[in-house]
Image (cartoon, rainbow, N blue to C red):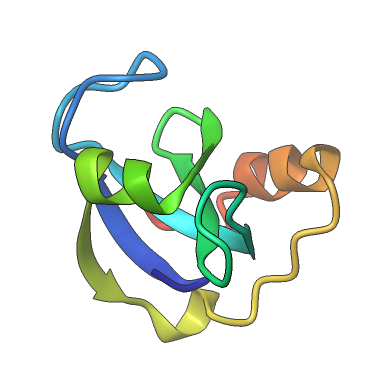
Length: 91
């Protein structure tokens, strides 16, 4: 998965139900699988979390790539929260 991808949850988590939409806003080196990338996802309710490669396979389903979000530059969680409040992502 890449920054800008739309995903949906396969399991309930972070006070979200199965099928909740999220967007990948960051990629980072996976801690368990060398050479692979984990992703951070923000969901419709504003909650966010990171997902290792293993977790991506079990908790997320790829929906589509959204070009307008592919260049999102994650700086810190405060800016992420502000961008969410400004409706940066179309949920």
